Amino acid sequence: MTGSMNTRRLLLFTLVLLLFVGTGFVQSWNVALTIFNMGLVSAIMALGVNMQWGYAGLFNVGVMGFVALGGLGAVLVSMPPNAEAFGAGGFRVIGALLLGAATVVAAILAWQRIGRYRGLVVAAILLVGFFIYRAVLDPGVAAVEAVNPANAGNIGGLGLPVILAWPVGGLLAAGAAWLVGKTALGLRSDYLAIATLGIAEIIIAIMKNEDWMARGVKNVIGLPRPVPYEIDLQNDPSFVERVTDLGLDPVTGSTIAVKLAYAGLFIIVLGILIWLAQAALASPWGRMMRAIRDNETAAEAMGKDVTARHLQIFILGSAVCGLAGAMMTTLDGQLTPGTYQPLRYTFLIWVMVIVGGSGNNWGAVLGGFLIWWLWVQVEPLGALLMQGITAGMADGTWLKGHLLDAVAHMRLLTMGLILLLVLRFSPRGLLPER
Image (cartoon, rainbow, N blue to C red; front, side, top):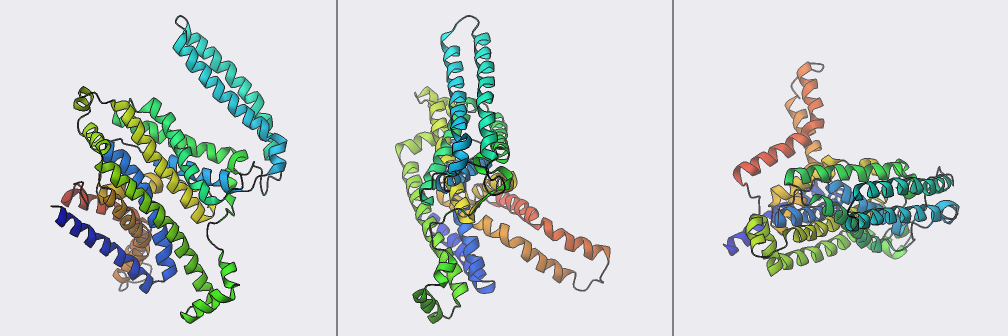
């Protein structure tokens, strides 16, 4: 059984590798490496969702929010600080946030310690705390956003190396997951899905509207890189000499070198995560998580704290998604809150997990690479297919126009078709859980 599974895994990963290599030969190596790097990031996202669903059966459809928080972490850590804006209102903003946190803590303590009329007391604390919070926050926000609003209007970051932002992005997502989990993990799976989706939308709405934090929809551009810039490589005589010897021009060689450098960093991160995930899955903790997933009542009867374990795995999976979000923002070089859509950062990640094999870490990674390659390549391949089908049709006919217009929907059609085929012929995924 183990030998056949290893052979199947090797064959499937070889097939996916051939898809990327074929892209390099048919299109270009720049295109192939661009898809490959985002495939690595997608595989890490799928690994995080697989921890939640495959290990514990938690139906999280708020992946988008945790990925976005990872991107926000990359900005807050790596961007240079905006001293003028921070001096104008940054301390008021931080003070307001601390007051808001203190209000919530006071309300929780009042609920726990007061017997009679505690509902009224908690409501009074929250109401008074809210007005004080807004009275302190609003002037600070206005002062920050008034400083050079065209190019900044935010407090900036800490100016630290961007690689340090990756674990910070994971910590931000983990903190949000703790807050979500403490309130939502006691719900049934369908209610948990609704709660996580709603909270993800709230996170995106905050990022879009709070300009003082990360410029909102005006976007943050020019994030620092962990790898060299192409122009610096092109001005390096030794690099130019090496790529010329390989038969490449300096521009193409520099872009390929930068993408390879990103790929190397991402492969290291993915390798560490898959090693840790496999070790955890094979440990007594992993067996306990699967026992809870399969029968919560029996596990609880054996003395396992099901809610605590669910919270634990929910935080871990969300942290991995946040880490991937920080890596993706670093790769893009910018944070654009308007691009975080459930279709791309929730639905597609779930397709990767289901197609690859829920409960199998290697399956999640395989699904990440395969589905992302298809997501990128289906539209141009669909355009070629439709052009071939309609080649003999007269120009201007309604059928030809309809078929050519349908190319824009090939991605969604293909994803749905793949999902149906896998669920029909291999319902446990391409690499099932052993």
